[in-house]
Image (cartoon, rainbow, N blue to C red; front, side):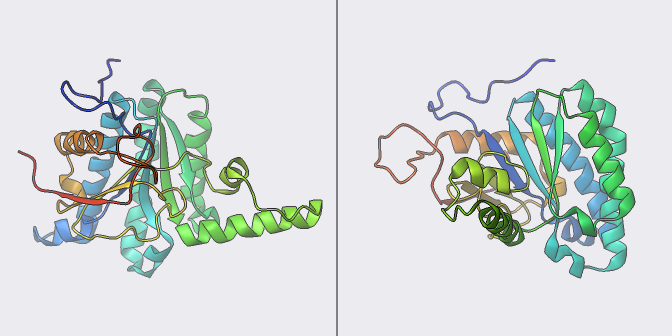
Amino acid sequence: MKTRNLVSKGQSNNPGPRHLAFIMDGNGRWAESRGMNRSQGHKAGLKALERIVLACSERNIPYVSFYAFSTENWKRPAREIRTIFLLMDLFFRRRMQDLKKRNIRILVSGDWEALPARSREIAETCIRETATATGITVNLCMNYGGQMEMRRACALWAARSHETGDYSLPDETEMRELLYSGLPDVDLMVRTGGDHRISNFLLYQMAYAELFFLEQPWPDFEEGLLQRVLNSFQNRERRMGGLGGAAPARGTKQGARLGSPG
């Protein structure tokens, strides 16, 4: 399979993101603006998820996280919640063989206990079937909340400290082990749908992420706009608290807005 170089000719030497995260917002509003029900918007959002996973694989972005269902999303109507889980089940079943063929590893981050039993079973199968993949890792955050993740990490560390008698703070490696996925920090976060907040997503991991807020709803997020975001990211100076002129590193807390492609 052919892959693409993220850095276009004439761009800076800032490498592409190692970990790219998406808040896939705007599915319901996209549907309502077209006179459709919100479920149709989530179906269109699933198609966008599939094409962006493939686009990220073609670009060799090592880790890609998607905010699929938050701990706050349980407040939505029961019918909409059922649709979301049915669509995620469909993604796992429909794309299983393709993911394996493309050497893509699947992870799921979040509290599994509240998920429908059928959804857990299907997700666990996909995780198991792709566990040996050495290509990109796709991390689907389901029943996920950043605050809950950090409370869980604190509880796990407190229990370990009680057992060992060592009450020192965890180092970075130990902290990674306490989080759901253990993935590296997010370098670039993209939120579609027009809102300008991170909504309890990967709070620990996004300490130095570059933030891009787009007006386009998630179903309209195309490969061309993804490339525009990546190009813009590469032209940013990333200082990690240092001085200007330092080698590009993790990131700065800086927001950006992009218009429509073209």
